[in-house]
Length: 190
Image (cartoon, rainbow, N blue to C red; front, side, top):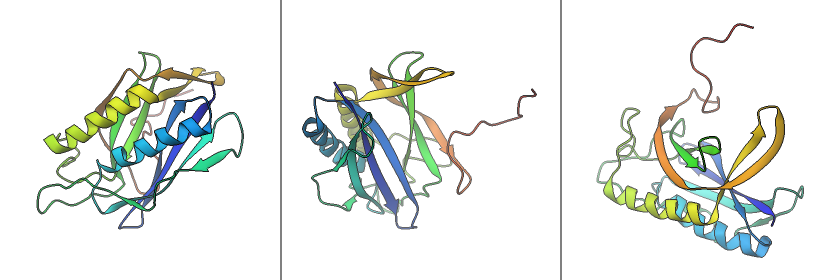
């Protein structure tokens, strides 16, 4: 069966933009779009109203240029309602979420656009309402999505495995304009 990449483009009130991608294995594009349409509200239930999803699309990873937009109306606004006085934080801070398939087959996603009751001073605080939404996302990702990993560091061929669990590893920040997940510390000598 073909594998589809589900890509979501997001922005916030400070004109910061980012994307998140997930993978699913479905019979055809017609079966991939409902998975995409299910993920969009689940992902936006974790974000405040200062965050918007501009569009979402599904594309077949084996066919270049083959993509189709979600059937939902966009922009899709975040629906998480934190307690009074809590605001969204910069997109330069995100939750490191692990999509776990096995000890060697796992993927990381940096979820940005969280509120400051979820991330306080680079510490993750699991609020009950947010955790309930995250649990719904977890069940959808484990049911319909896959991790994408290379077969080996020297082999660029991709492998897709079923997600067994989804959990928050921690909080990461980055310098504006730099990617998340850069190595920290001294460089290795060659």
